[in-house]
Amino acid sequence: MKTHRLYYTDPYLREFDANLIETVSYEGKTALVLDRTAFYPTSGGQPYDVGFFHDVRVLDVVDAEDERVLHIVDRAPSTTALHGVLDWTRRFDHMQQHTGQHVLSAAFDRVLAARTESFHLGVESSTIDLNRELTAAEIARAEDEANRIVWEDREVAVKFVDASGAATLGLRKESKREGTLRLIDVTDFDLSACGGTHVARTGAIGIIVISATERFRGGSRVTFVCGGRALAGYRGLREVVDQSGRALSVGATELAAAIERLQAEGKDLRKQIKDFQGKLASHEADALADAAAPVGSARLVSAALPGWDANGLKTIAARIAERPGHAAVLVGGPSASPIVVARAQDVALDSGALLKALVERHGGKGGGRPELAQGGGIIAPSAEVLQSARTLIAQLLKQPLG
Ligand SMILES: [Zn+2]
Image 1 (tube, protein in one colour):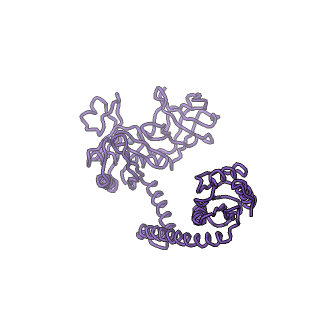
Image 2 (cartoon, rainbow, N blue to C red):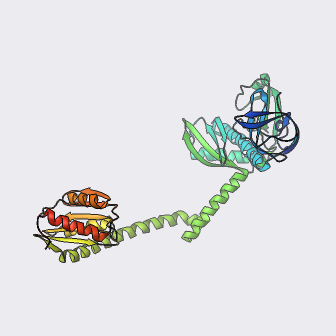
Image 3 (cartoon, rainbow, N blue to C red):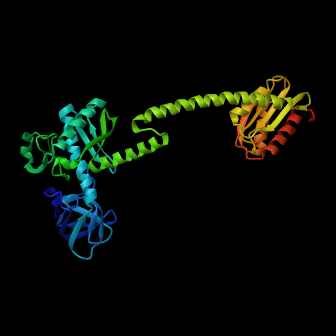
């Protein structure tokens, strides 16, 4: 037997009495079939209601075959005379979003001749898919028109008509249903066939805000929030703007300019640091090269330079290698990561091969050309790696350490 849907005629009904007709299993869960219900089952883009029958929790509501409504519950009730109570906060939110969708879709249709292809009421926001692309200015016009209808507080009436006579009524979208049609009539603005729950007057929508637009399947997907969700969204934005403003010590309207200023300052500072690092690297390289240890006919710098990153080490090593007969093995210390090996043109040392030998022995990775090689990821202590490097270089140059 089909379930009598109380929300069809009274969407404001929050509590009701009903009789349990049967308890069935639905996808492994307990489901109740009642003679009547105010619980809305998921359909037409609107999600289900939740709530209670006494202390039995309603977890989901499903539109089943034979026009039955299945109430998925956490356990079977102990009586057949049930008193249902809806989670009204959730339901009223759905009513605001859903009625807002009717008004917004009608506004797109009337102002821009953009037709709604589908609607989805989500947990945080809702979407309507329109059949054409829209500019930001067009979106704003439709948004203005929709809110004008909200603020005029027009009646949203529910009417039942025979499907055969509906064609002459001027529905926004043709209905394929047969038999009796349920129409939602936003006075002198929109007439749509719909089985969902709606507020009684447009004023209860509060406000309609479009939060995002994107191209979608040759048309547009418009994301929007109504009423309580718009207020929550505003609060969220206010929080973010306040925090950002406090962090930068500016008001909301100056935020963008303050961020641009910070970015420009950051860019200047990075350039300055780079210049200073270049100069410092030159001094460091010269001091190290002056104290280089002879290895055969070459002079070797092997040092740990804590605080320098890979690029700094590379700059220093390259500058040392500008001196004829010089080679350098530099590590970041205290662990030997990063590591750079470089040598002058006249030194018969393959930096890439040396680095490979070092990472094979101490872990990490790296490689490069005979003149310059670099690596990282070594966790062995700097002193150990540098000692290995000195021993290997002495062998490679076939000369004892000086
Ligand atoms: Zn509707």
